Amino acid sequence: SRPKVLITRPDIPISGLILLQEQCDIIQWEKPEPIPRSALLSKIQNVDGVYCLLTDKIDDEVLNAAGSQLKVVSTMSVGVDHLDLKALKNRNIKVGYTPGILTDATAELTVALLLATSRRLIEANRAIYKGEWKAWSPTWMCGPRLSGSVVGIIGLGRIGSQVAKNLKSFNVAKILYTSRCVKEEASEFGGEKVEFDELLQKSDFVIVTTALTPETRLMFNQSAFEKMKKSAIFINVSRGEVVDQFALIEALKKGTIRGAGLDVMTPEPIPLDSELLKLDNCVILPHIGSAATETRDEMSIITARNILAVLKGTPDQMPVPLEL
Ligand code: GLV
Ligand code: GLV
Image (cartoon, rainbow, N blue to C red; front, side, top):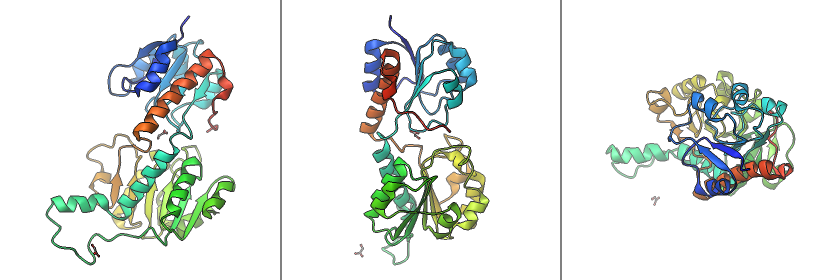
């Protein structure tokens, strides 16, 4: 008989949807907003697999509601912090995610965000419409140069390494990184592993690509921002919860650091009255790191395949997320 699969959003890329429709009966949340908790708790009953997104919190309560036939939870994301991995493991439910495939798209967005922040692209563009561009001007809209700078990467995983490789072609002087262990691939870009504090003190650009874990939650607090250079640019493409956002806002207001570029924040979406939106030295994007058309197609296919692998065989071919 055909397994039942819950898909928590209507607008997933069609390529993954088709794969699932061929072999499974689909229950799909039909509204464009994230599935409300109450609907998730009821729709997950009796399904064998779930295709979810990073906006869906899958915890004990949800798994209790699901029933014992649930065999796989597959998220269309590389981040798995919205999944209670222990609770899933305890129930022997397999976890699918999409590492690797979104590395290039996220790394290129990271470079775009970094340059948009340092070279003040959004602010400069807005200045035109406000009638503030009077003439080419020797000192107007200047920002720090990437070439010759020291770049620090927090968490040198797949995405962090690719960011480093991309930045090397901008002639950066040095790349520092923090990581649990020395990374072999760092030799490709001359990356040097340092302690967190040293990275903060020496970097002109601090880029966060680490996974959200109990150790990285709120690691960028007031004390961290105070250790950074006054001229530093802070870039976050991982998860908003890595940052004490109140401390970041204070640091940007007081000039503790020069600027910030954020693809992630708390909460998401950011309320329109947030202080963050009032700061000229902060560039904010709506969590679009992996939003390259081809990448989202591939993510959808892998998310679907991870479900089929478990429900139709071959689960050992799936990558297993690191325990958080
Ligand atoms: C995006 O943030 C992802 O985890 O894929
Ligand atoms: C800038 O447009 C220059 O010519 O220096």
